[in-house]
Length: 445
Image 1 (cartoon, rainbow, N blue to C red):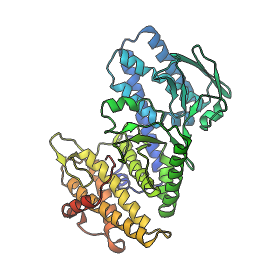
Image 2 (image 1 turned 90 degrees about the horizontal axis):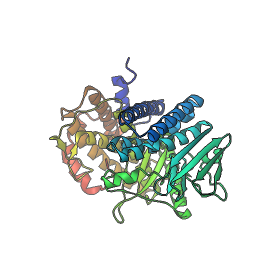
Image 3 (image 1 turned 90 degrees about the vertical axis):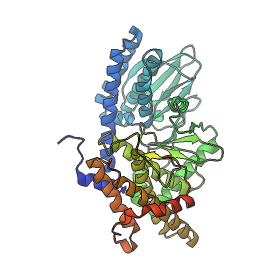
Image 4 (image 1 turned 120 degrees about the horizontal axis):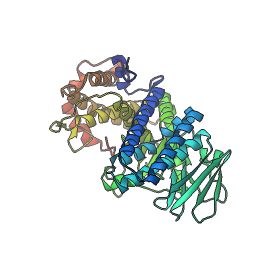
């Protein structure tokens, strides 16, 4: 069997949007396979680009270090390669035209190799260019410097960072990996989020490239500098996980396991929104939520987008058509079918989430009523979207199985007492407009 051939029954179960045993490991495996393919594609492109001699030597050195790290500690190296910012760098580098811009972007392979080798416990020595006034190691943190280049040297338990013409900065490897702030050091680690391996990541330099090309749908990367801001993000994360653990322990475990980074962003004044970049699954891009409930909704919503982004790199769920666009209850603009699949999957999980929040033992009567309304609104939107998907004629065989799973979950959510409602997904058009009037959300999906 092709390792990427997913049986129909598994696709139907995944389509239900509920966490499944072994699913997280499978998704990580598929994502890593995709990363390896893209890295090999990048190497092939670089070999055909007739790089200058110095750039070609650096490429060979960085690639060899990646291979050494993978052999030294495969699990640690692969975890580092799966970090979301790596996907952003790959997408940016594969998209830039040949020439100086490509050579500059390709230098990011050095910082990636350094981060992976640090995680794997390798000793190494690299001379790397500095861009934008800081040297960033994806998944670890950054070092501000005005120097054009910096030397990184890892030996045993320490990593020395020596910007050209400046004093060296010696960092314990263990502190780097635990995202701790070393005393008397300019090194700025990522901020760990409690109860999970996730971090608050406002260091990714490649998101800035996407804003210039509208790649972030109007969102702007934000920098969190004040300690109070960091504490606010950490408290919201912790409170949202506590809320999920009370309402839906399996979903709480899924979020804590899969989310690798929360990326602060800005939108229009006073506006709130969240998004997932398909190139960087497991990163939740979001403006600062106002409540733990809003944070929980954002996390659940964007995790579904990440799951589907990974799955979409393994199987084709639908055929796209430039002419075929659809109106859905959660967006004012017409959407291509792939976006309808993405949005339906995420909103199905939100209908499930709010139904469970309504049944929390600690919820007040007013909170229960509000949660039931939210669940009903999301169910109405999903109802109409399933009707569009199943009648589109654009789903592949695998896509049809996946959408059948979504319909099965929708029918269970909509049935009083847990009984399925035959034909429920054909009644959505009359309900979706009412739901859209009652519910306005800032999720891009």
